[in-house]
Structure formats: C-alpha cells, structure tokens
Image (cartoon, rainbow, N blue to C red; front, side, top):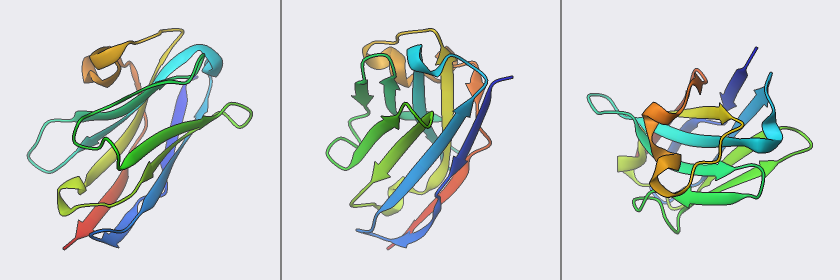
Length: 128
C-alpha cells in the first residue's frame, strides 16, 4: 500500500526557511517520480518541484527556482523540500505525490494529473 506522509510545515515570517519532509513507503521508491505540490485557498493545485529518484533528475517551477531545493535520501526513502527566502505568496498546503516506476521529464514532473498517489499535506504559512 502506497503511503506518503508529509511533515515540517509551520508558520514563518517572510525571508525565513522551512524544510518539508515526505516519508514514502509501499512502492519501488528507487525508480519513481516524486513531486512537491501546493494549493492555496481558492487556487488550483500547482507543481513546485519534482525529482526522479533513479538519477536525481530535478525540475522546479519558475516561481521557486533559486529558493527551493528538492532532495532525497534513498536509504530512508525520504524526499525533502528545503524552502528558503519564503514569501507570503508561498503560503499554501504542501503535498507530496508519487508516481512509481515512472520517469517524468521537464514540465511533466510538475503536472498534477500525472500523479496517482498523494499525501495528506502540510500547511505552510508565511507572514509579511
């Protein structure tokens, strides 16, 4: 059974940092595409960053390039999202998603409809 459990959300002031964690289990982690997505109130869910665990290929949305970093720990089956220089517009519920045994390339890594498995989310609130 695929499970994705996010943690690490919280409230910070603009300019601060947070690190989100996604614990993955129940699927072949080592050859999967895993992404971080976010959804603000009244807005559609959008892709933030993605990684293919087989070769650490990463993709970022332009809105977070240079500020967010996605990384992985294969031994622990974890995926992280380090978020620096946070802005009020980064406020959202953040979700981890996985598509096992699939290598997404480019914008496909950030497409909501490409992922079948989702976590419950962790809230990030950035105040000005």
